[in-house]
Length: 459
Image 1 (cartoon, helix red, strand yellow):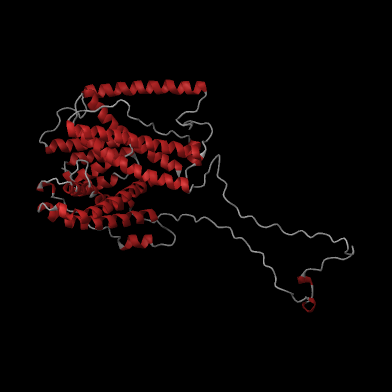
Image 2 (image 1 turned 90 degrees about the vertical axis):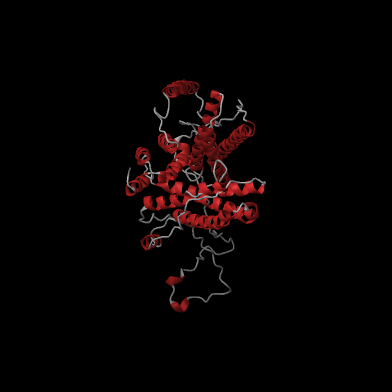
């Protein structure tokens, strides 16, 4: 058994920018056999971009599940047959992609969908990339709806629905030039879309395995449902951010920069020669060459020419000198309450209130909740760093604010939920509790994505 200070260090290593270090930390956490690390492993499994790290988190969670059931797997977490079949599929897929890539190069067509080049060629127009992103989001939502329908049919009737026409959106492959050109907004959105598509692919693969076996597994159903929950959260945020990018596009850079608006000064008037004026007449000398007594007094009201001062874009300040791994670890501890608010297997606070509104009688066993951490408070040293004039991190401060607001709302909801849950009167408190829990869920979910962006900044 590893001591608590030791696995505290491992939790900090989960924020390491190097995937190998994160994977090593996950495996070491599995060896602790301490159930308190399970929420952190679950967060890694739901949020991690690297497939190897996510697989390690999944393996760790299966080990803990085996411990809770009183038996550890006698063989590897993946059978030899499944492993061999997976390697064969990967080999065939790699060969097919290699052949397709050679064919594309020979034909001279650009790679990727919607005319977007993956390895070169012209940078697509902004409208073309916006349309491609929107298409991926629409296809993803359609695919999620189909999988949700299959899940609903199985839970209601026990029939395994395996439609063959489920849309499987492919990731967007953007060339380095395209990524550089639209790095102000669309490139980042494209990366997040591909991350969401990867999570959707995992859920689709689970259904493929169940359909291939001809029977469903409750464990796989729960996992797929949790993955679809995260996909839907990601979709809502991506659709919002894409709409913002379309309405207010960021300046582009690279090969085809978007010209910035420039102020146009009115042309200086050019004097026109008067044909009736004697040729020898010359303009009066400049005022500064005349003696003070000879300067003519101004007549009338002088006309002032406005001077246009160009507006400079503010330069982002450097980040303050903070212990980011420690802060992110504390924020993740508070974000773990998302699992108490809403759960894939529909027995969270918000789920139970909604079920009670439909007339369902709930078991008191679902009323028990673990203790929650308190609000996040800055230390005096951290606050001093954030208040410096030469440094700032508005993203971190926004994440902390959202977490504290969400936690305060969730605490109010919990104060209503627990007594009424034990008293079997949830339906009577639902009208007040559901809005509180929903608002808390929204704020904490938004904070979760900010924390993830902050974690990725180091890499």
